[in-house]
Image 1 (cartoon, rainbow, N blue to C red):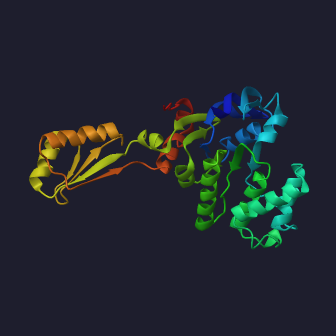
Image 2: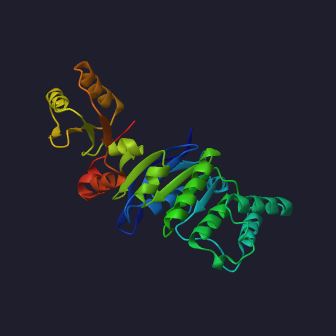
Length: 316
């Protein structure tokens, strides 16, 4: 069921404890995003799960293999695309992919077939024989991810994969990630672009001061932050007045014939409100819902480190 499991992960550098008991459960074939400010412990977590460094406490398994007891099996099952590209600038895109095929001990024919397939998949055919030093930032990141896929990994760790990319290149990478997940690959994503997590992640965890302070879907996290509301628009003043009496706690704008009602954004609360209005024959012209975005969530959970570290939000 789980591609990644971690319990009580701890790691220190000298006297500084970077991870203070991190628990993670990542389902297979999903995108799991780990959010956190610089220094929160995101990259350290990735390094432990990818066997690059050892934890000082706790346990973890990836693709069913314990990272401490069976690191070779973990490495055979994963791919890692780090913050900094692993592309060799002196080689062409095709040569970089063939080198990775050799490192994975693929036969000559199989390595060539895999390289051609990935060049096509990542839209690099026209630039395949050009030096990687001539590639744009987006092309280099695509080649970097393509090199990760040469070994057909079950789990891919993407550590800040779109840092420095322009919006078009970033969206191209997003589409590639979606296609990988659709094929059954599990993606563990760390990012500082909250829009990226919102777009891609099936589940998000917020890491602050070495602890997971919140976890859930993007919508679940947003509903936990105050500021969500429903805006009702009316054509008749009498309907606005009736709705104000029925709803109670709401902000009324008489000039705009609008009513702003605090809401957690859940379907249940929205349905309950509409049922009450319908029972009283109140005509609503339009309805819109407004929820805090992930920026609001991130700031609320990490803005006060001491308070956030003590408060963990558990979501279903």
